[in-house]
Image (cartoon, rainbow, N blue to C red; front, side, top):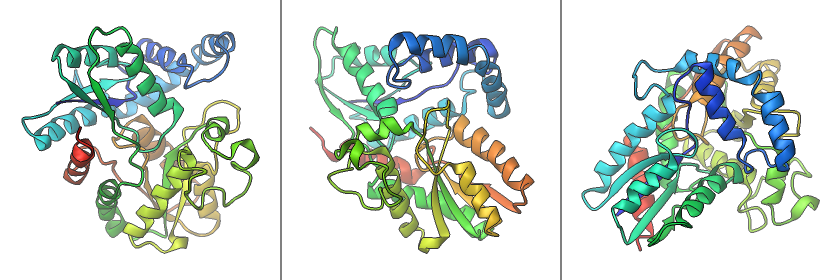
Length: 342
C-alpha cells in the first residue's frame, strides 16, 4: 500500500533566484495568504518578493547542508524519515515523499503513486496540528490532482496527531537529553504562528468566543477541537506532563510571524524577553509543531532567537532537535499509518 508523506517544502538552493521562485509559489497559495486574488498578487509581487527573497536566502545559507541533492535541512530529514518509515512498515508498503511547494513536487509524487495502480492510498500530512495553510492546503492539492485522474483509489488521510500518545512520547524522548544536560530555569515550547483570522474560522464558537480570553485554549473540547491554537496548547500540556514539568516550568510561544495582521500570541520572542525579565536565564526551547528540523527551527530559533536571548542577558539557550528520523517517532508514525487500516 502506498503512503504519501506531504510536507511544506524548501527552495531548490539557497540562492536568491531559487528562494524567490519558492516564495512566489508558497505565498501565492490562497490558503496561506487568504486575501482576494488581486490583493494577494499585489502583496506578493510588489511588497514581499522585491525584498524578502534576499533575506530568506541569507537565512537558508546559514543552515544549508553540503549535500548537492538534499541540501535543504527539511528535505534531508524528511527523506531520512521516509526511508526509516518504509523499513518499519515492511514490504507491504511503499512510502513516497512529496512537498507542497518545491521538489519532490506533490503532483509528481502523486502521479508516481497512481502509476502503481494501488486500490488504496494513505495520505500522511506531516503537520501535527490542523491549519488551513498546512494540512488544508496539502489535502486540497491532493484532491485537486485526483480530480482529473482516471481511476481514483480509496484514500485514507492520517488525522492531525497533536495528542497521539506515540507522538508525545517521541517528543519527550527528543527533549530529555537537552533537559538533562542544561537543567534549565524554563522550557519554552515554540509553535509555528498563524494569523488570528485563520484560527477564528476553525473555532465552532465563531468570532464571539475565540481568542476573547487568556484561558481560551486551556481546555480542549468540542467547541475548539479543530482549532490550531487549542491543539498546540493540548500538545504542550501533554508534553509537559510527559517530561514531568511543573506548571510554572514551561510555557507556550508562537513564532514565524509575517506582516502586520494580528497573529496568535504570545510571540516566542516576547516570551523569551519576559523570561529574562523574570530572572530565568537558562532555557531549553522545544518546537513541537515541526516534525523535522528546517529553516524555522535551525535558523529562526536556533540562531536568530538564541543570539537575541543571549544578547539581552540570557546565560544558556539550547534548542532541542525535532523528531527527524528518531526511532520513537518512526514507530509512532508507523502505528498512525497502520492504525485505521482499511
